[in-house]
Each structure stands twice: as C-alpha cells, then as structure tokens.
Length: 90
Image (tube, rainbow, N blue to C red; front, side, top):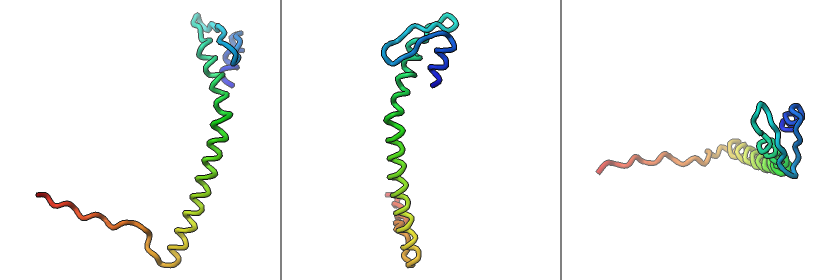
C-alpha cells in the first residue's frame, strides 16, 4: 500500500488501531496516512461486490444479445417506439 510505503520511508508507524504522528517536511500527515490505510480495508468489500455486479451485468448482456439475435433472425423489428408527434403551438 502506498500509505505504508510513505510512512516507512519517513520513519513513521501506520496501523488501523490509532493515529500516529508522522512529520513530513514539518507537517503532520498522521491522520491522512491513517485514513488511507483504513480505506485499504474497504477494498475487501468493494472488489468482491464489484465483481459480483460485473458478473450479473455480463449475464444480463448475454441474455439480451441472444434475445436480440432471435428477434432479428425472425424478422421482427426492434421494439423501438415511433417518434412522438410534435406538439402544435396554441
């Protein structure tokens, strides 16, 4: 993780238990590094959730494409509504 690399290169400690002071060029970046480190845990939920959503999307896409091909092969026009008539001005 980038926050651990930054902390280690400046002799600081980063963990998810608490904020530790980390002075870099005279400014304390401890809170920022702590937040970045804890956000790394967020990927434990978001990566599997995103993968699950991608698989569902891929299944729906495949089913939609198969249905579209069947309709096209049978000569049925696509279900696109005709353009609406323009409203006349009063």
